[in-house]
Structures are given as structure tokens and as C-alpha cells.
Image (tube, rainbow, N blue to C red; front, side, top):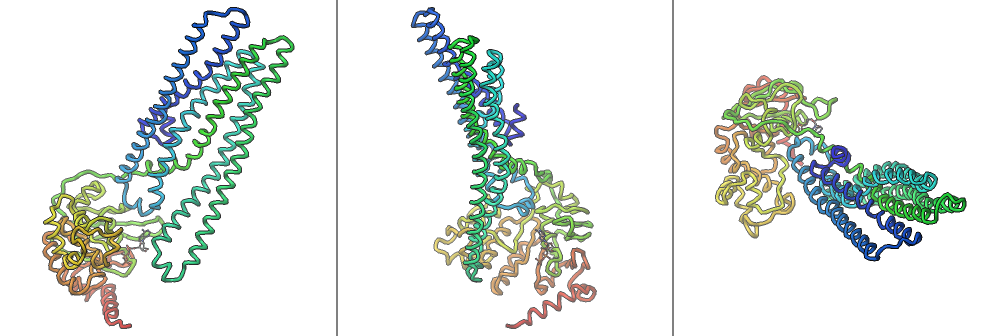
Length: 573
Ligand SMILES: Nc1ncnc2c1ncn2[C@@H]1O[C@H](COP(=O)(O)OP(=O)(O)OP(=O)(O)O)[C@@H](O)[C@H]1O
């Protein structure tokens, strides 16, 4: 039962155990709720037959029953609610930990609003179902067959009169389930599309306003909202139809018991007390079934959410171990890679970037430079060939170990919504304030930091919205300087620097790159003329490798790039 719960509702081991206990508690509560009805019959039987006992006995039995009911309900409450909140906290932690171990490519391939929805909303929905419905519905799945057997054994006609309509009432729920889950899938899909559309609208405000797209975007959003409303109403209407029929059958059971019972009473087959007993039992079972129906439906609603959580769990984590590295030569050996199977991006790339040297990757836009950076930092894993650091296959190195040896300055710099000081300290969490200041100075950040209201303590808006592109990039360089990792990757850092800064940063970088493996991507060939090695890429292949002087003579692709650079520099508006 535990394994069934674990697999069906995407629960943790502890959560599945708690659910078994909650289901057991609910089952006993259903059973004890039948007791007052039976006691009433027993007491009435005594009175009718003139065997009335001492009133204290009836009072005592009633009080004991009430105490037992109270205790069982306390246990049920504890198992259903208190343990549930522990489970949802565990589930969120488990998902967050799992995500920390997923390859970064997973986050590029998946919608971010979808992922945060899984952690927050999906877990909240499962939490609600666990505390309000699943234990009740599961306990009913055991209680109802058991009661049916007992009632049919007691008197088969009366038993069937109670059981059959209730059974129909229950059978109709899966019909409702089918309608709900088909409708829900469409509803959740459209809900997700809506939330993406809203997010996109907010993020792209600048483009929407500058291209005068406000009316078009608004109309599009309204249409999406209309669609989701329609699907929601249709789903609810369909499920209500099946639900309505189901409720009708559960009421019918009382009528059928009356009809069959009175008929049996007239022919002298049963006593009035017997009929009353069945009627009371029918009322109690009907009440229990009605109470569990909502829960059953809620359980069906969470199906797509449970699947999303299962999908995150199923995604293989990035393998690798905390290997001690002493040499940081980085070698690509016949590496192949594709984002999607049909479109190879790298086709047998081989080159070595040696420690203590600067290696530049150049090539036309789309030739695969950024993809090579992504592979060497394991943001994606390569498909064929081999990438090694110090002779060690990077697929065997844990991502956390690898990242501790690599500092990257990306083209697009992401800054956190915290102070300047904390944003630079991301480079090395245990750096002192003084070390952060020195890194900021080396990256030529002091001019703009001094201009900020609170200097290093100034909060910078989400994604550094209050800093210019060049300033953000200089903060990112400060992070890399602070990290001082043996492998340094610089992706187009010259793009948003101005001439004054570039010169000063150049000096800091020259000091930083001593004895490191440095890989640079730059479209401005002037800035890489003096590097130790240039790797020329053409459509995912290495066309040539050598120094600037060698390539300028031998490589047609490099010559072509030089010519384009010359034209770009001569470009005037
Ligand atoms: N996340 C991705 N999913 C699918 N295809 C991608 C992805 N990123 C890049 N590509 C494709 O891979 C190819 C190589 O892209 P890459 O970004 O590596 O080139 P690049 O040389 O760095 O280009 P640029 O100089 O313009 O930055 C391109 O055809 C690009 O469309």
C-alpha cells in the first residue's frame, strides 16, 4: 500500500507512510461512526422486548463510544493534517535538491514558470488533497466493500437495495474523472500558456511599447483569457453532470431500502427494527460516501500535477565525482554535439587550450563558439568524442567541482537583486569586504560604485536594472577576479566596454590570467591578435588553429573574418 501511494501521488517515503496511517485512521473513523446507529438499535431492541437494563449501562456505553470516537478523530486529524504539512515541506525540499543536481540544459529546455509552478502550486495542491481528500477516499475504497458484504450477509435483498444504488453512484465518479482529467489537461495547458504570455508581456514591455504593440498584445491576452474561461466552464459543466447523477443514485438508495424494506415487512420477512437498522446503516454509508466523493474528485484533479513532479524526479541528475585536479589543460577530442538530434552543431571538434596560455575561439555567427563554452562548463553534456581537463573526462567530474575551477564572464550578465557588495561576493562566498573592494577596483568598477547612493551597499534592482550594460559586465569581471579560478572563460567581454575601461580592464585581466587556462570568444579580432592560440571554427568544425600571423596567411575563414572586421570598422551611419 505504501509503494502504491508513493508511486501514485509522487510522495516521499515518509509521506507515503503517513498516508497509510491517515487512511487507516479514516477507515476506523468510518467504522466507529456506524456504532451509534447499532447501539441505538440494540437499546431499542431491549426496550421493545421489555428487557430494559440499568440506565447507567446505556449511559456508560454511550460515553465510552463517544470517548472512542473523539480519540479516533484526534488521531485522524493528526494523521491527515499535521503530517501533511511535514510532507509538503519535504517534497519541496526534495524537488529543490533534485533541481540543484539537474544539468543546466534542463532549465534551458523547460519553461521556468512551469518549474516554479511545480515547486509551489503543484505541491500545494497535493498538500491540500493529502490533508482533505486522499485518506478519506482511500479509506472509503476499503470501507464500502466491507460494509456491502456485511449488509448482504445480514439480509441479501435489503443489502442489495442499499449497496447497488450506492455502487452506481460510485461508478459514475470515474466517468466524471475522465471528463475532469481531459478537461483539466486542456485547462492546465492553457493556464500555463496564459502565465507565460503574461510573463512575456511584462518582460518585453520595452519592445511592446517601442513597436507600438500594446493593442495587439492586449487583444491576444484577452483572447487567451476567454479561451481558458470557456474550457474551465465546459469542464466544470461536464463534471457536474456526472456528479449530479452520482448524487441522485446515492439518494435513491434510501428510497429503494424503504420500498424493499416495507415490502419485506408486510410479508413478515423482517421486523420493523430490522428495517430501521438497515435504513440507519444506509444513511450512514451514504453520508460517508458523499463525504468522500469530493475528496475522490480532488484526487483526480491532482493527476497532471503529480505527473509533473514525477517528470522532474525521473530526469537523470548530472553524474560525476569530486575529483582533485592539479592540471588544467583543457582538451576537445573529436567532440560532437547537437541541441536536437537532427541538427548537429559541433561535428568532430578537436583543440587543446593549455594552462598558462590564452586560447581564442573565432568564427562566423552561429558556428558553435558559445556551444563549445557551454560544453566545457557542463552546462550541456557532449554527445560524442571526449572533453578532458588535466586528462580527466569532464563527464566524470561533479558539476560543483568543475564550477569551483571555472570562472565565466558571460555576454549577458545576470545580477541578483541585492547589494553591489553581495553581487560581487557571488564570485567567492567567503571573500572579505576588503577582497571584494580590491576585485571591484581591479575590474574598474569604482567610478560607478562611488556614484551610487550607498556605494557598495546600494541595492541593485532585479537583474541589475539600475546599471548600464558596461557596468554590469564590469561587476561580472570583478566576480571572476574574486573567484580567481584556474580556468577563465571570457565570452565577448569587449562588447559592452568603452575604450577607457577596456584599457584598464585589460591590465587587470593580464594579471589575472597568469598561469591560467584562458578561453576567449571575441568578434573583434584586433583584441585577440596577441593571444597564444586562435581556433578558427566554421559551421561546427575546426577549420584551422594557430597564431594570428599564421592564420592570416593560411586560413581562408580567418582571412574572411579579418576582412569583415575591417569593413565593420569602416562602417559609418
Ligand atoms: N539552446 C539552443 N537550442 C537549440 N539550438 C541552439 C541553442 N543555442 C544555440 N543553438 C544553435 O546552435 C548553433 C550554434 O550556436 P552558438 O550560439 O554556439 O554559435 P556562436 O558561434 O556562439 O554564435 P554567435 O557568435 O552569434 O554568438 C546555432 O545554429 C544556434 O542556432
